[in-house]
Image (cartoon, rainbow, N blue to C red; front, side, top):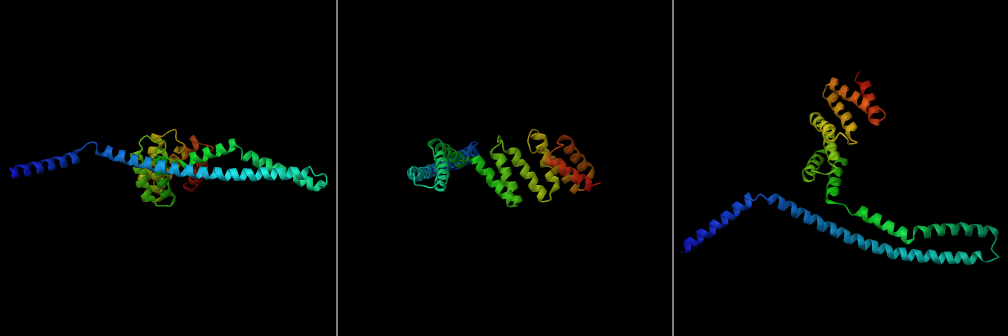
Length: 247
């Protein structure tokens, strides 16, 4: 009997392990877990932001009190008939500055400032991941930037930032002088995101990549295309310079 129970326990354990390995939803569960962690981080950041806003409101109240006190003192001096014209002129200027400060510290201005700070401080996981990848690119860690932007594209397949992510992948290959892969990615921008503002840059860099590989015919064709399609752009000016160099 004991042997039967032991065999049954082992069988259940193995079947459970097999189910875990074959579970088709494991990747989705991992993503849900990651999203939950991102939400917790975002909530923590928001709580910290509200504390900062409360502290700013206290300081705002103190500043407003000082401004009001200063305004009363100025008014008292201005009513003093013994003040000289020069002093009265200086007081008038000071009064104008106080009025400007009052305008800046009005409840409406304060609320607008708070909303602006709140919006800038709340960053989505998508924006955060993009910024991390961009920081690697800016630091010239091009291999790491390629990995980070590739992961970004896989995670956020419908992101509006994917044309930029693809451009930085292509430009990373360009800076690493891996021109064949740079060409593939620059060309993908032109064909996949034809309305992107990065198309003219991608086309220029693709042309230069061909030239760097020794293919002046295709390279010059793309540079001339940049000039034709975007005649008044900075990229067109650069294309003309490179065309002169490759005559």
